[in-house]
Length: 171
Image 1: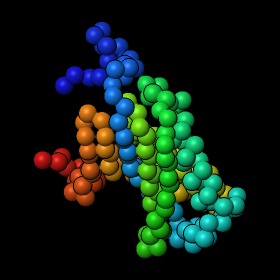
Image 2: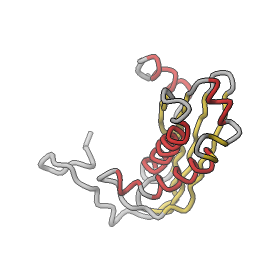
Image 3: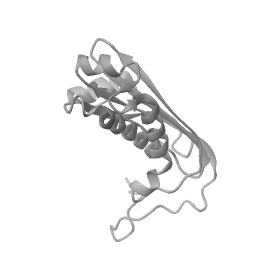
Image 4: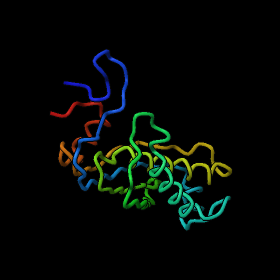
């Protein structure tokens, strides 16, 4: 397998995308925030010790996607056309699932932007709630789906997620 971000001398490099065709690209990433039942019930309505938890975290996730190239050294600055951050609440285990969808029409994909968005939103939830609970857990985080570009579509299956949690390799 040829490594794209390594030059002929084995040194890290940014991939040259000058000649690549612009295509529509989309990535969806997810991550989980787990907390005590007490904290979960306190913030589920959105209000926490620092105010509106989920609006602030959504804005932070959008900003994270937009600034990915400033955080990850070999990422290209990409003109994003859409970023959305949504939440799913699970009362049974006091978790919040964060889902970030990122779109562009560019020469390279937005997987890193979607992942960064989810991570920054999760960190913001932690920051907004740490006065109440410092033991909040973040993760796992992973790419659910991507489309566009040379490699086409990737869709993470439930089997892959289950096997990874159990330490098994996928066939």
